[in-house]
Image 1 (cartoon, rainbow, N blue to C red):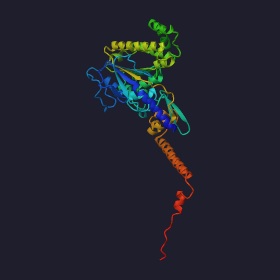
Image 2: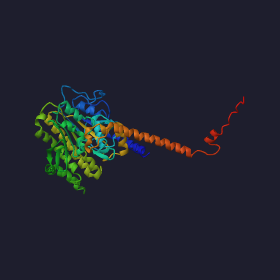
Image 3: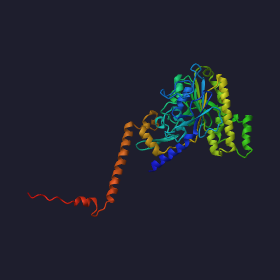
Image 4: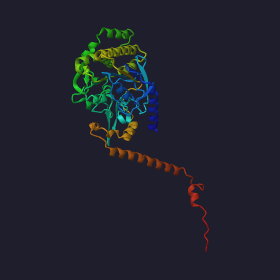
Length: 426
């Protein structure tokens, strides 16, 4: 009973999120509808990027028209965790419908959007989920020990299309969010240009090449001395509200990244930027949601932080336009009220994992020296449901027996005392 209550509660939460998820298209032709399925977003982004949609049979009648002789040189995707669109960006807003695969976590939701597959296929159930074994249960944490999506994402397809020569970089202050926006680590070897930039508390690092430092903490801190930002932060201080450099560091880090990423590309990847291969940049903004939780969306802190992030995004767009000498198609995804959920429910996830044989799909999940086989999962499935069914049958029979009337009106009495026919003596 508790299981069904939980499922109904989860579905209620999901239904309340559906209207909050949207995508804004900028610097591209119009999409010919006001809504799009969550499973078509990946196809739409790949279409805008100039490559074939991930799902070849996808319905594309509403997709923006494109000129095959004028493929964009780059595509910029910016995802906001836990926020809705407040008309802060120009472009065409499209409502994303669905959320039918039971995502209650932002990582699961963005993986569905970027892969075009439901949660039970791509296998990302949250920031962490359970792996069940014979004796012990383990917790798998996304982006740790090779734990990644089972399904290819947009960044994977772009990287594969151009044989690793495309600059395909996912970025965020949050390691797991950056990883969800990046290509698979397996594709980031053998000299490919894939990257996953995140802040580890000391510097910006590339998850796929941990020896590569992108930006140091000293660079991030010196960035705060810029007069423009000092003035805006001062607006917060005069109202007796302050940004905490420890608690609000993700905001400072993402603000720094937006303001310095274009210069980093020019300095470190001049040849890749100058070629005619499509580059794909995905930036995850999770810090504004943290600011909203710490201070409230009506606080001066959140208003100033939002303005600084929005200004930095516009600045990045202009800088990328100058670098590539053309307008860069840009998509803004707002994940609504989807937020981080550290651990998913063991009841719900157990059922999903067993039903879809998820734990056997990836060889890299044996990091805890315990990988479940299909036979083991089927045996657990059969044993559990058989035991449950027989238990219910026994309980039902026992209850029926206890409630029977032992008097002359009972079934046993009536059956045992039926009049017998008189036999003919002949």
